[in-house]
Image 1: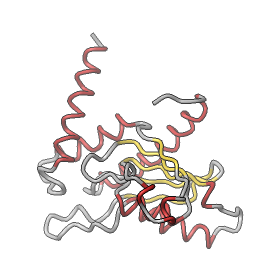
Image 2: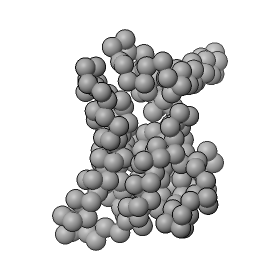
Image 3: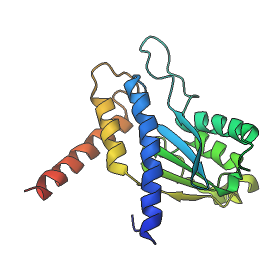
Image 4: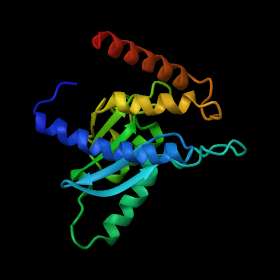
Length: 195
């Protein structure tokens, strides 16, 4: 990714680092390692990590995505914070994985106008949908999406998750196959540059 100004990229990397910390918490609890934070005026106002994927005995929940959990906390922050007046349109949402259609729609409806994500989701990513073909609510959302901030760090966490023997979530899926293939490519590039 080309940055217009280094300070914006450094700031995005810093906040994506906070999202990666949320993803690491999910990973440590056996969950799919997605983390999300919402930033307003350089202040963390909400965070969330993926839940509902750790149990092998239950059907995994497809509702408790990191972005949805962060948006729920965001709603509470707007209501509870008296020290700052949070303006959704001026917030940025950082996620370690490209939001799916459900999350992308919820982010748009929340009024947040800027999404930054780390790792693309070739199987379920929703940010590349053509909003021009949708109703005015979505078509006129004026949302901006920045991909691949700290992509390799996020990829490494997903590759570790998919490499675990006891993981059943999205086992043998396109996402698992793509992630593990991308991890091998990054590793071989790193090996070549270290020679």
